[in-house]
Each structure stands twice: as C-alpha cells, then as structure tokens.
Image 1: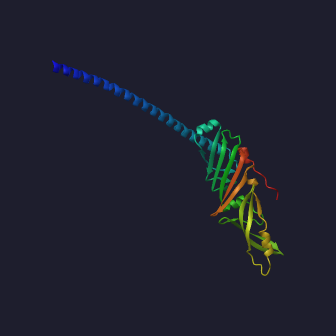
Image 2: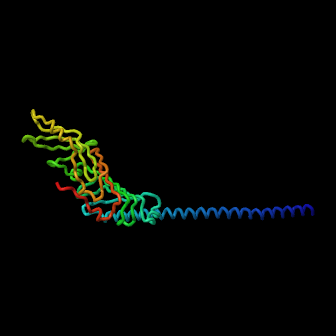
Image 3: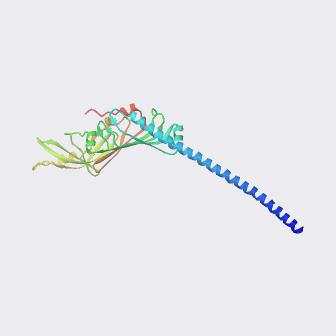
Length: 274
C-alpha cells in the first residue's frame, strides 16, 4: 500500500505540475501574441502612411506639372518634370504651401530658340498658384547659336563666340574712311535685366598699314557693352549669374514674391528705345 500510495502521490504531484505548466506557457504566449499584434499594427499604420505619402507625392507632382504646362506663355514650349522636395508632402499640402518645388525641362523652346536645359527651383510654393511664391531661382543653358538669337549686340550684327569663361565677337568701325575690323574678348556678367560684355582685350583683324590704331583699341576696351534682356524676361525676374564653358552659356535667374500664373509669365519687361 505504501508503495501504491507513494506512486499515487507522485502521480498527483506530477499531474499538478503538469497542469500548472501550461498555464504559465499560455500567459507567455498571450503576451507574445499581443506584442506581435501591436508590431504588425504599427507596421501597417506606418506602411499605410508611407504608401499614402508616395501616392500623394506622385499625384501632386503630376498635377503641378500639368498646371505649369497649362500656364506656359504662348511663346514657350516645353515638356516639364516636377519634383517636390521635403518630407511628408501631405502635411505640406494641408499647410497650403510646399517647401520647395523643382521644375526641369530638356526640350524647352523660347520664341523658337532651343534651350538645352532649364531648371527652376521655387521655394515656398502656394497650393493656390494665384498667390506669390516666396522665391524662384532658375538656370537656362544655351548653346552658341541660341545665345546669339537671344541677345542682340550693338554694331554690325556681331556674333558671340563662346570660349572658356569668356566670349569673343568681331565687328568693325570706320576711321578716316577706312573700315577697320577688330576682335573683342570679353567677360559676360549680369546687371539686373542687362548683360554686360566687359572687354578684356582687343585686336585689329584688318590690315591698317602704318595707321596708329592704339587709341581705337583703347576706346574699344574702355567701357562695357550693355545688352538689354528685359524684353526676354518675365517682369520681376533678374539675371543673377552667367557662366560660359565648353561652348555653352548658363544664365541664372532669380525673383522674389513672384506669381507663377500665366499672366505673370507672359508679361515681360521693356528695353529702352534704341
């Protein structure tokens, strides 16, 4: 009997321990399950937010691109790409203003003049395009023929030849009844809505015999040549920088409190009468 009782107590003790063990494992499993549910829910929420952000960003970029193309002046043709910078475009839209919008085009034409590349960066862009943008910075890259179509030099229709950091042009003047040709090497710099050609050197390109032309050359390099570009720029836009390299000229433009509406883009400045 003692052996039987001992076996019975042993079996009961083992049974009790066996019954308690599943209870502890069940509680642990419930905690792990709850944790996994929370993590999965968080992932779903965050993933959904990122998905909504991605969809909203793509939709907004397409909408802005369509609006820009619709508002282009009649003398401008371009296929534009739009990139909205900054985090959480949904929050930007809700605030009524986007931090920064970059608009670019590789096939723009202005008055029929091909532009190699145009990049426009607008900061503080309102959802309502009838409201002014805080600031606009743009760069237009033109090759040599396009630059000569854009800028009209005074004189006998001289043509700019783009070098490395400089631009040269040939022209002629009349002295004592003689036509004297000359070549000017100049630096292009911006001055508001004007382009200044500041001569660095001058040389005569036609035979002058014993004629002393030093005074002519001195006069040619004494003053910069001013080229008005206001009638080619939207009113309120100014030139901020000009870089010349490898046969191309990159013109940097800027404006503050500028409205990106069709009427603002179509209204250009004026050049003084010649």
